[in-house]
Length: 280
Image 1 (cartoon, rainbow, N blue to C red):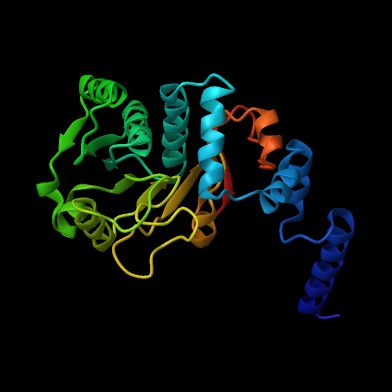
Image 2 (cartoon, rainbow, N blue to C red; image 1 turned 30 degrees about the vertical axis):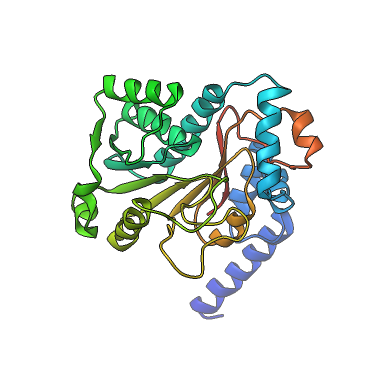
């Protein structure tokens, strides 16, 4: 048999043996290795497939039960959520200059916590906080990031898309969460328009700003088009419209009894991690 024929025959024979030994896989060794080293790997994949996506009223109800029935405080959950966001950013983007755009509510608070941890992780965050809250919690968050040397920027400095693309490698979208209902109002409509036109990657926290929590992006008007999304507690229905991008789940604080009550079917988190990747 010619040399080329022997090589092809040998390759086919080896391939058959691999398939018989490991089952059908493009990477039989890696599949076998991960199955043995991480027995939860396949369970995670199937759990993600059957995971529940929350409607707005369900997301609100779960939050309220965490506060009332389970004794969590807002700032406690915010710290866990913001830390999860920072870990997801660090898993997705190299260190660099980050613009965190924070709204006046809890989603903005998550952004503040995320910025603080990103600073500790070696990033250079700045915060745009155009509509400030009068709550004591948000005031404390402002104090924390200020004491850590995190700068605040004025909305006038990012009116043009080039203002963002020239100064930042990433935007963290922490403007609105699951309580938002379109349409966008000033100043966030112009801010989001500039972000979208800048072509800078955007990391959205829980719900991409401008999206309806259930229906997803609006038919017209400004809205964030995220490069990466992290869902907190459990994914919201709008996350189904974010296919084709990396999607994380964060906020490893849901008691099992609460998850069972709402049939969340959350995937297992790897080891001691506070995030799990749902799709890439």
